[in-house]
Length: 175
Image (cartoon, rainbow, N blue to C red; front, top):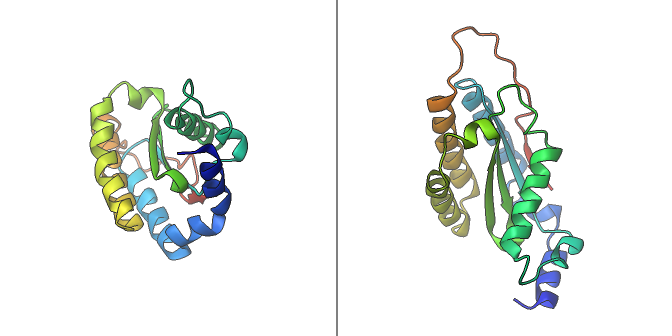
């Protein structure tokens, strides 16, 4: 895509687009699902939906630094800003959606990344992408959350005691 057209596309979208994709009622239901998920394992899950990349990031897209690499770097940046890396067991997961590019990134902290292959992540991303293309954001994110939860339960089940702390907010970050 021409850089000028890409810049226009990204400038056109804003936070109102994320609120249309994930309105308040959907965000509230997803928040409850994250909380329920986290009661079953020691991991922390964050959902981040971003309308568009800043133009400064878009200007760095080149043949040496293609858009998927820039998008991955952006997801890694949100992984840090949302403190997903800062969990006791190093088993946090960020599910990142970039609406302008229909891009999906899963960023897993190092403890979980040791247990889950790229193929396993892709098996979650593909159905999510299909649902998002069909406009089924809630269904797609719910299914992805359930599949991520299953991985976390398999590798990091919740302890029997009830004193498990919620380390990060469960809300959907929409920007």
